[in-house]
Image 1 (tube, one colour):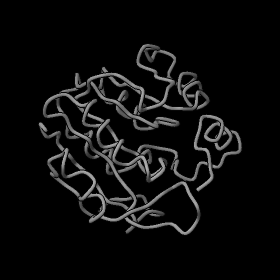
Image 2 (cartoon, rainbow, N blue to C red):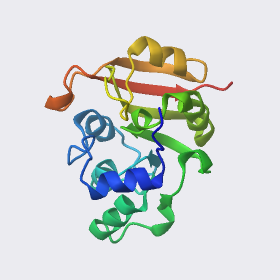
Image 3 (cartoon, rainbow, N blue to C red):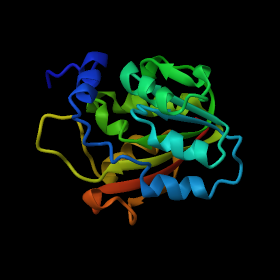
Length: 197
């Protein structure tokens, strides 16, 4: 694969409105999980947040410590236009792999599939590093493979299990029953708890 998945690449996707991963709102699996959380003080990271619909949803429902990160500054600027009271210190314009922090919950929404498959083990190790003891990685991954060169890059349950099981206790890794209609049958929900390794 010769694509350079750098800031310029992702910014150009936004500018050209080539954002097929963005369904215009937080998706049902993530909403339903967030709806069940009583402790709104959890420190939450959304990496590769893009337009950060999940962050807007969480803020609306009282979460107080949301952090969003993206390699492209463009969607972060748009987010701040729509959420002017969002604390600037919780906005991270940087490479995920360079980010430092300690989180109770990390939300995965179309970030994993945007990274080159060669970065997947590094992704797992970085997620493990960023989570506090007993921290949770939650979200959705594609349960299919794609014909085009990518991104997105797909996978299946067996592949994800082999990638995550050394660093995470797999609480849930199964087909989504509540995907948005265009993705029905093509997503898995993950709920992974940090292992002490």
